[in-house]
Each structure stands twice: as structure tokens, then as C-alpha cells.
Length: 153
Image (cartoon, rainbow, N blue to C red; front, side, top):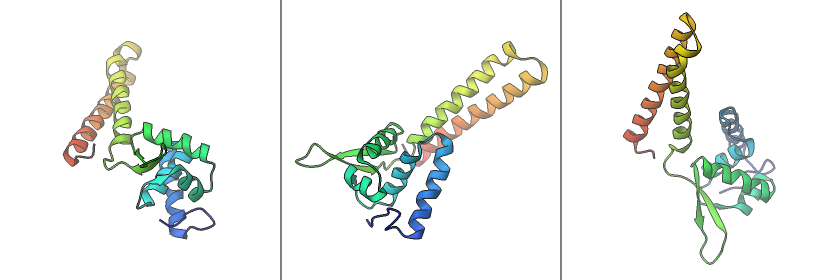
């Protein structure tokens, strides 16, 4: 894969990195993790921390911390390097990791609103809370169904 650090990237690759960050950071993904995810999406082969750090012109320790975050979101995974204690990182084939986690949060929020609306609010406020809660629960169910149908997990 070509080095996509700012000094060596194509404009299209840099724009892709920036766009991925712009979309994932508001979802709570740290900026560096979003950059590494975008970098790995562009990579044809698994990348070592050294390659990631060099390609993005960041420190290896920053790349390591960000990679752990991505592993926690289940969007990348480690591959052992033969004859070494080091790992290479690759984007997971299944694309449901991050969405499944967000889906569960939607469901938990939906449960909270539906279950407690009557106890904490009255009238229109309680009705609104229940409606929002039902919407979140329906979204969780739709996302789970889609993940299952597409085999994205």
C-alpha cells in the first residue's frame, strides 16, 4: 500500500482519511483511532504498528493505544507475525462490531425511557418518552435483524 502520510498521500486518500474521521469522531471514536481505521481500510495487507505509525506520521505509542480502541470496537483484529511477538492489524471481515455496540446502547436507552416514563414524567412528556423509547427499541431490533441477514457479524 502506498504511504498515505500527509507528505506522501494522494489528495483522494487524504480526503478519505479526513472524511472517515469526520464521520466516526461524533460517534465517540477517538480521532487517532478513526485515522487508523481509515488507513487500514485503504491497506491491501495487514499492517504492523511500525507501518501504521510511519504511514500516518504518528508515534508508535499513539498508534498502539488507538489500535486497542479499535480492537475493543471489534472493527480490527490482530494477526500474529511468524517468528515474532509482534502483530499486524487488519480490518475485520464482519462489519457489525461498532454498529452492534451502538445498537445495544440504543436498546438500553429505549428500555430506560419506556420503563421509567410513567414514574418520572406525566402527560405529554411521558408519552413523548415512551415514543422515543419505542423508536430506539425498534432501531435496535432492525439493526440486529440486518446484521443477521447480511452475515455481517
